[in-house]
Length: 100
Ligand SMILES: [Ca+2]
Ligand SMILES: [Ca+2]
Image (cartoon, rainbow, N blue to C red; front, side, top):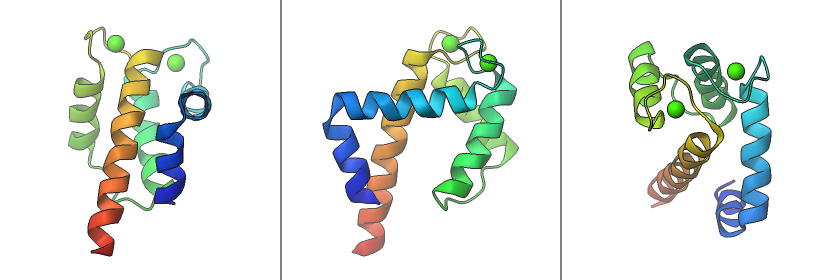
């Protein structure tokens, strides 16, 4: 799986396609922003999908604050893209550490 993530990070069009897919999946009401509740749902489903430890409610709140760069209380596409990039880097690092 880490190889797939590395390939995605190397290819901007591929990465963008994945970010778009994740964004539209997280944006349940389709208003092109991810609010706190949508973000929370997404954090839990990502943890399931990538076999990560389930985040706590506090993790979710703290992550939301970090991701919401302009502090308008919602996550827009560019904020989301930065978040996914960091998340993928973190997943790759975790994998590397686990295999050492
Ligand atoms: Ca929304
Ligand atoms: Ca924002």
